[in-house]
Amino acid sequence: MKNEYDVIVVGAGPAGSMAARFAAEQGVSVLMLEKDRDVGYPVRCGEAISKAGVEEFISSDDKWIAAKISKFSFNAPDGTEVILDFGEAGYVLERRIFDYELARTAANQGAEIITRAYVNGLMFDNGNVSGVKYEFQGEQKEVKAKVVIAADGVESRVGRWAGLETHIDFRDMESAVQITAANIPVDQKTLYFYFGKDVAPNGYFWIFPKGQNNANIGLGVSGIIGKKKSAQSFLNDFMNKNYPNAPVLTTVAGGVPCAITLQKISAPGILVVGDAARQVNPLSGGGIASGMIGGSIAGRIAAESVKMKKPDHILTYDKAWADRLGKRHEIFNRIKEGIYNFSDEKFNNIAHSINKVPYGKRTLGRVFTAALFNQPSLLIDVAKVFV
Image (tube, rainbow, N blue to C red; front, side, top):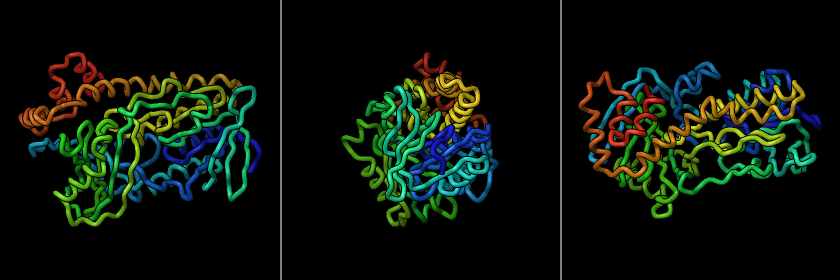
């Protein structure tokens, strides 16, 4: 252990590991601190990701792929099912193994990693972030850095300590709960989505297969709905109706920030990435791929700043993120708000309409076009991201 590093990353999830890796591969010194005992634990995620989202950063490997996905199944309140076939489009991961491998790619580039290191404060020099304070093996420690990257998840405190506005409206914070269950006889190549007031009002319910008839089963609902009826209650109702005897292997619950990126994700001496920066796709709630992208941009810019000896260079991160994904997420957020309060009848009509399209011509773009047919301004947004 040294007393100073060029870059310190707080959190070893996908965003943190990519930040550490992309900084370290430029030859600067990097320390990544993870508060939990193991990288990749606990898993708080549906674990679905596109194949392209994975392979931008790491070659696909069956050891961390639980299921290979080629179809989406959208299920309307009246039981109508719409199936879209994409070919081999994505995966359901084993996040414990996947996250471990991502961290290993950072280590292979020279990043140092410490687990069970609980960051509990920041260091400042003339108002600029200049390092972190943390507890390790019962001792309080301090370590300096030219750049700190906060990758400490949805409940992030590091950005807030630096004076960044991390508040999110409770209506945009989805209340989510998920179990991993056994003996779930679904097609192992299909992601299942359910909509309607009885399963997930102002959100959606999912079943994501994980091989050998195991599956992640969960839902996310808006903060407004969650105050009236908990996500756990909706999950219990669904399981009692559909899989009453399924053994439950794991249970996780938490908040998912389905909103646009924080207004500011950089400040002197600090960058914020992943869930901590609200880099989650607001429409789907997916954050693995976008977190890795945010982390990679932050790591690259942090290292450039160190090598150029230009501390202010890190402030270009906000625009770099916006140009890559941030502006696209703003479009997804408008689409989300457009479909947020659909009635069960509306969902049923959309399903009936899409099922009239020949199977081979069904696309996500067609689904959203049908959903937003009477909202011309949103159709333009759909065209921007799906056409």
